Length: 136
Picture 1 (cartoon, rainbow, N blue to C red):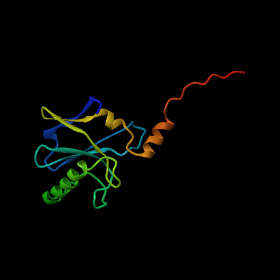
Picture 2: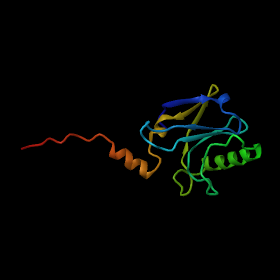
Picture 3: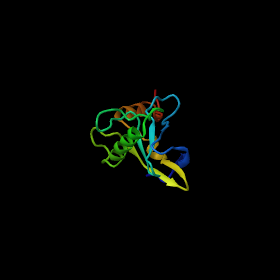
Picture 4: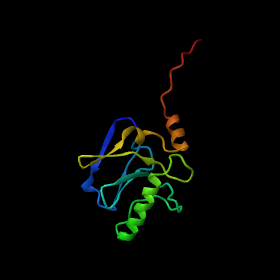
């Protein structure tokens, strides 16, 4: 953790059993976002959007018509994934969430890190290169 935190929203703006999408990267990058999910209490987890749940379905935002029972199932899956060891095959990446004074924060360094090998390769191709002097 970097100690630098990005304010995402107020806890009261994320309904119990609700979800919120948080963008990552720059506007020109088409990166998967982070999905915040709140339990029925004040617990919040953050997972990489699009990664697989344990049953193989992708992590996505809750549809508006989702029933409370479906929301509880979604929350239980998300909580299990957030508690799984990082980097384990078949689990989406989770992000550190900080709750303070009714506000939800995510670690800025974690948000900026590549979430996959493909993202790391993309980031490497756009990294600044040192100037090499030309002798002639």
